[in-house]
Image 1 (spheres, helix red, strand yellow):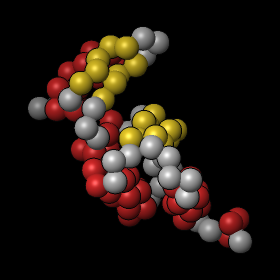
Image 2 (cartoon, helix red, strand yellow):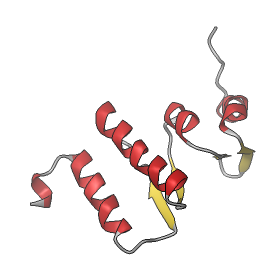
Image 3 (cartoon, helix red, strand yellow):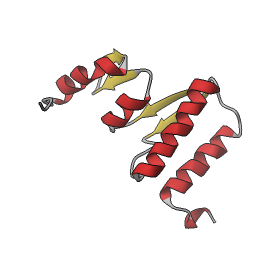
Image 4 (tube, helix red, strand yellow):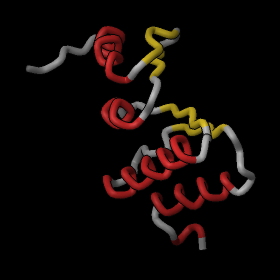
Amino acid sequence: SFLELSGGQQRILLLGMALVSEPELLLLDEPTAGLDLHVRTHMMEILRELTENEGKTALMVSHDVGLMLENVSKIVCLDGRIHYTGEPEEALSAIEDVFGLKRGV
């Protein structure tokens, strides 16, 4: 049964169920929160396949900055308003400014 599956298995199953209707846009709220590294990596691989090879668009909310910087094509940094929108490679300084972080050496 669904309740006997692990949290990661449940999320992957729910993603699969959402894909049955063949949506062009996936809205995902913290899709990898609380998942172990293996399942989180698998989830991002599935999403990458869908967006790069099947023409789907995924709009994700996430607080996992590292995961987003490594796996997305565009980033929007929000904190009550839009502070940055653009390429992940250039987002880190905006994220640091918004949240008052200092980059380690």
